[in-house]
Image (cartoon, rainbow, N blue to C red; front, side):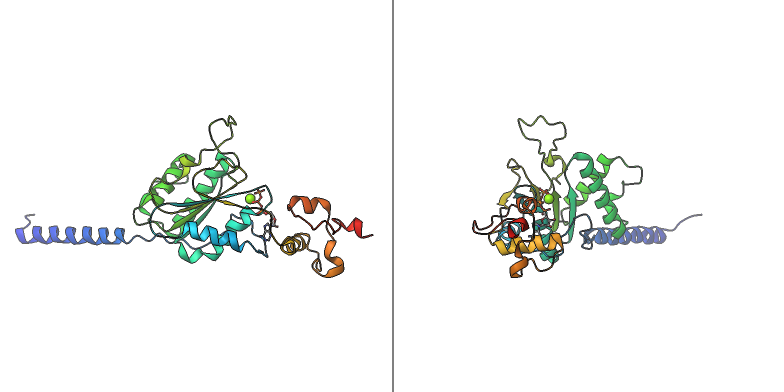
Length: 264
Ligand SMILES: Nc1ncnc2c1ncn2[C@@H]1O[C@H](COP(=O)(O)OP(=O)(O)OP(=O)(O)O)[C@@H](O)[C@H]1O
Ligand SMILES: [Mg+2]
């Protein structure tokens, strides 16, 4: 069959329009992922930490560039809960919030696989994740997610790396140590929060998470943790054990007995 010059022109025009349309759709690719913190363990009643939240907001605010905050403090002091509280309070500022467990490399790669799944559930045609299949190797999934996060118009994400307690730093010969830099997207955008017990994580502004300043806040946490109503009410105020006091790093006024035994 002979195709006339008018038909060829029509075909060329159609291809051009389709390509332009596809390019337009691509440039408007959405990177919004609905908010979920199912990976994180969250306390029912978050108390206090307004100063730390404000410090985090200051460091993670502003336009352009990669922003990173390192929440550093002792085990059990409240770093994870602070990161959860920040993510919840500022979720509207981000197009996507991802929670990753960086306890060790395996946990982190599993977290990346869950991130890929979440993105693909909402964006099955996500261009930079098209290579990810059920059979993809963990490293391939990590690379694909990083590529998605690197996209020049995908700049408003927040990643929380929880439990970065064994960082790979000079002098640390621990085989289980993780180098977070290998897992961070390359592009100079996005926001990162790291929680760590280590003082050697230098990838962002440090926010020290210390003891709660007001003993009543600590008692409120104990009350919630022990599910004993009335801890704050006068007489029942001291119904907790030395272990609980120690694990929450509480400083009680010296005049107060530390355990219910002292009450007898
Ligand atoms: N601000 C808070 N409000 C309410 N509960 C809190 C708060 N901070 C800590 N807790 C309580 O203390 C527990 C330990 O806190 P969290 O898990 O945040 O500590 P962490 O510093 O992340 O410890 P780790 O280094 O072991 O990960 C929580 O499960 C919660 O019950
Ligand atoms: Mg924690």
